[in-house]
Image (cartoon, rainbow, N blue to C red; front, top):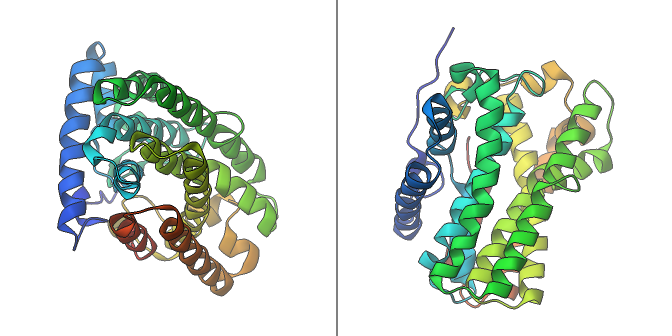
Length: 308
């Protein structure tokens, strides 16, 4: 068995941007403290939870929260609790996605998946605990001066993005599509739910923490959803053509499992062109909606060019 190396989480999306690096480092410190102090859990459950939440990763979604807050004119540190909440939802989804009953993956983020290291039962429980903790952490926006009405809106948006209509629903559609021929519309429906919804919520919640109005948050949510679609197209392309060492998880698994992917539905050339077109539209939408879009756009560009 080949064990992939654990790569630095800071080298993936923040490379070349000191500002992104600063925000990433601040987030890592905040998340580590939040999990260890407020979500420790008894015995091996706590170990599994920390393993899942603090494992090396791109941290794209929390960076979207922080840079969206800044893009609308807010102080990005104010959004740290929301960034932690979104990352814990993402970690929960990965832990459950990797389980034997789902995608049955051995590696994630360059090391053993949570259930492979701690057992299936603790994998399920760690994911459950991370999801619950996300909403507890989101309420800490009040300590950062975010008004209660905005926090309620943030809770609503994160709950909707996570549940049966979006992320979990997308996972169900993904499972149902295995081994079947799925067209472009069907794949899009899976990707915008399973990946796009949480990215949209991340940007919208960050904007709310930065005092954006609801209409701006809605527009940014829509841009984030489409960004998630393009992100997943790119992920599908990487799964087909990368390596275990580079990607941090086994490659070629989509084809082996008969997964519904956009490249399989429309061809690799069209899939690459569509992902690029969507990302350009996302950047334009960000520019129209934000007073200070620079760093959020830098993050989006880095995401489009990533190799893992």
